[in-house]
Amino acid sequence: MKLKYDNYIFDLYGTLIDIHTDESSPKFWKKITEFYSCYGADYSPEQLQQTYFDLVRQQEHELAYKLAISFPEIELERVFAKLLLKAPLHHETYSPVCQMNEEELVHSQWVQDLSNMFRILSRDRLKVYPGVIDTLKTIQKEGGRIFLLSNAQGLFTRPELEITGLAGYFDDIYISSENQMKKPQPQFMKKLLDEQQITASSSVMIGNDFQSDIGIAAACKVDSIFLNTDGLSQLEMRARLSRVTDDYYKGYKPEIVMSGDIREILDICTDN
Image: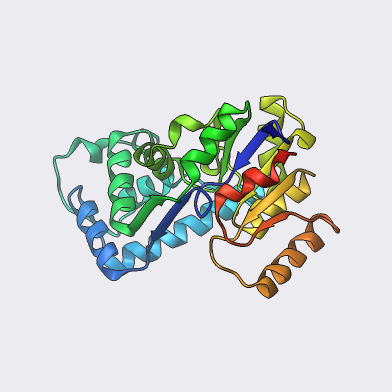
């Protein structure tokens, strides 16, 4: 087998990992509220949920303005810290966590513990898609380099890479929250290409989202493969692809794996 590309850039969620989370459940926010109350911060579940989403939107807007980009990605660590400090009411507590300032909280074990609980409570499915491990092993065996380019929060994603056993398969990992931008911001992929000293022509992007995965590949003139893991119809795929190519690169055509089975990329990426 001779691989067509030297470098394989993968999306994570919906491409390698099948995941489902729900951050809208009242039961979920009640549990998070109870956690904050343990550290003196008093909210109602509705207050906490609304404040959380307000802070996320505010910080995204500020970051987009600061960096002059369209697709910013904040670090949720700062949102979690602000929620503790800016609660509408506080009760007395002797926890040393409450003596920390925002910057100390952002880098604290407390934020890590909160993020783990936040993710576990909101997540009801986490598993690697069939064929993923074998496909990655085959690429490695044939000399291909493997990179992750994921729209995600490092606080959530790095533990999930370890839980699923995927962490060791990547030559390097690029997570949006750690880079202040997300796909399809072209600079995100360009950073990977530049830092790894690889060319667009020697690389392929594999993902399951037309706007973020195929869009960033089109903008950077990198070949791409779309995995239809959501079971989209051909009509819906054509509509979504046309919106992407109109925005980024007219005439750009990704390869399509209609079944969504990652094992099929080996046929696409092999020179016969």
